[in-house]
Amino acid sequence: MRVRPATTNDAGAILQIHRRVLEEGLFFITRPHEFRGSIYGVVQHIRELNRRENSCFLVLESDQEICGFVTARGGELSRMAHTAKVEIMLRASDRGKGSGKMLMQRCLDWARETPVVEKLGLSVYATNLPAYHMYQSLGFHEEGRRVNEYKMTDGSYRDDVLMYCDVR
Image (cartoon, rainbow, N blue to C red; front, side, top):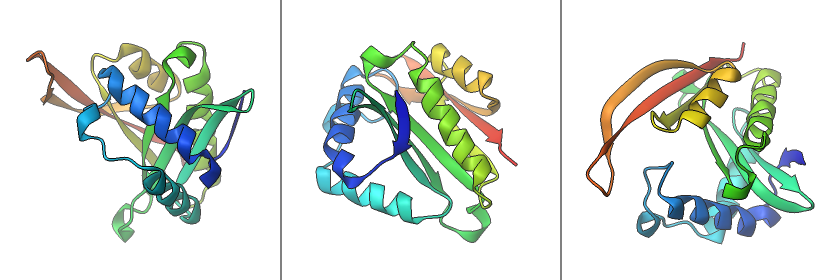
């Protein structure tokens, strides 16, 4: 397994992973029918993040197949340029094997090597304990919680946990 910067040739695989993860309905607020992603959109997203000093788009590859990705999107306004918001997605078959941690560690390494970025932030459902604990093990700390922020299809609620890592 290796982590590398995303290229526009990866767009199809990235889009497929994005759709499959959303279809699971467990980890993200976007429901499958609300997702408007396209190959063109992914290509544009890769190009945009790759050209910005405070952003990155990385993929996890195994046997020349994309199995996950992480993005760190730096703030576009000058007062937020030092922060980057992280989003990670992995195929279900690759979870629980250290793949996510490898991908997140490379994102942290990138942030520490980038002079502009001082803080990585992310959001995770309070019920997603494996992800929460992985983030903690990598140095992320809880900085806030939005109670009952998301209402699920079954009528239950999920707290949104805001986490950060100081990478200075």
